[in-house]
Image (cartoon, rainbow, N blue to C red; front, top):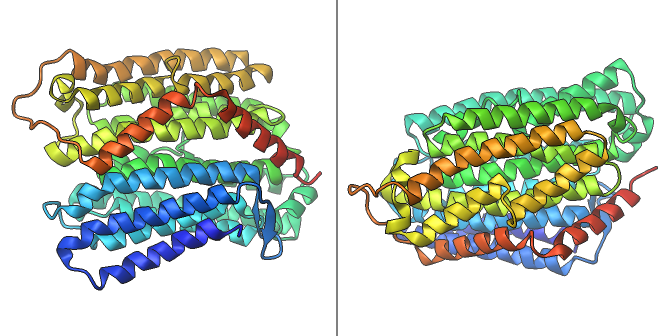
Length: 476
């Protein structure tokens, strides 16, 4: 069944709430295993429907090869996020929260369900409902702890999210008025360059730029990343980008395909400003989560370079880089979550001497940071190589040069953390970190994936083949 993964996630969300009614409070930490089992079941279901393509609800929901890769990335990221959250939900020594662990996991699962539906939507109303389901639960998850910083982050996120949703909804309303239909394919056939269409495109890009943390729509990210619980920050850094990219690719290639060649210079300038601003701001950060926020902003600048390419290489390079970024970023956040859980500190200097007290965690962190910087032969280098190749073939060699300089700058600030771990002496006041078995498994899987994705050539070739099939099925 084409919608089986989404249905399994929704059923798991209700099951977590129901089981919570019949278990003792001290056993609530075990609900993570139930939620994790549901996500893994959805992952298995997704793998089993790999050959299937088709449509449901009169064509409003479709399954295609490229959506399969996006859903695979989201489900894998959700599984890792649940393992990161397990220590936080199991302990009772945390700051007061908005609810028990079951509500946390239910919101996360409903959020995941919206994100899974997003790349399969073909109807304007379905698209907006899925996008809001992929956004609104994040507001509550950000403000999960009722401490001042978490509440403040949640409030800022709500205000900025409401503004971006309003802009995008107004833009979608213009598209409906011009296209005279809710069907995305038919809207694309009816659109021609005109002032209302240009205004609609600008508003849609502003709304989705918020989710992708593109400059100047990135202002929410540093405060939200710092104030949210660390597992939520990890999920937000990956899932929000995946949802934003899914939506932007869907509209760009399905609704605006005839207008895309005219945007090349503007997209190149947007990528330049985003990666440069993120890299320069990251240099001065002292809080590790704010640091990762500006790192995520810079990564978004690299990501959208794929829109400059013609043919399947553009979408394939973006989806592949999203997969690489997801596993690499989650590997780094796994160490950050474990460190914060056991030390209560988030400053970069608190990682001093980690290689001496816990060499495995330090190695994992170093591999993840080098992957984000794009050091060969890690998969981050391979992902950036494909994106840079797309921009170069499109004639934007100056953008490739700027991106290469920005990658060099990013290496400097990633090395700041590695220096703390491998050169500075350990802080005697900090406890020695211990790795729970479940979290250790997530660390091993994400680190292995971040290393091997770039070394196994059939992964990108499979994504590229899926992108070619996806583009071939586009309405002409």
